[in-house]
Image 1 (tube, helix red, strand yellow):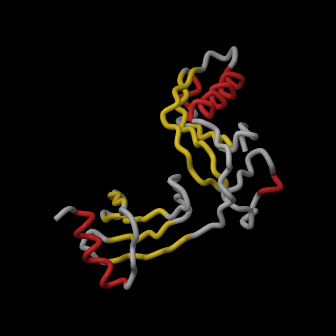
Image 2: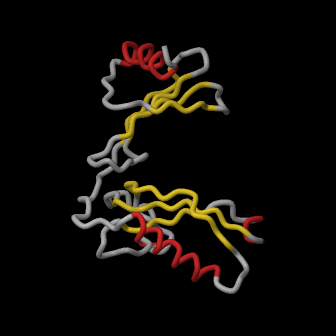
Length: 167
């Protein structure tokens, strides 16, 4: 029996939970056990903020069970394509890095439900009542001398076609 199935069979009768969909099981190198989680979403896009998570000790005992859910905004009727999202990310990075001798590689570009971003709007700090929005999330690895101090850059691009900019 596979490890995820064995964990699920051991957990659910004890926790009195019902799970839908495929569980993702990640090793927990710090505690020596596993994190088993099921993401919840209205669309095919994931939302790590909406999930049921079970932390399991190495001996199979349940450490904790949590269910987290956030309000999601309506999905945009017209969505930005992956290529358009990638062009927006590249355009922003090209502006930031221009003339500095820095480079970058876009490692991943995933559509996700993301929470309010206070990085460019201090009014959004702690704005928990704002719904999560659909966005392209780019994981960017910088290169050149900046890579000594910055390991990864995450940029969010609003997935609605009418926006197409950082949130």
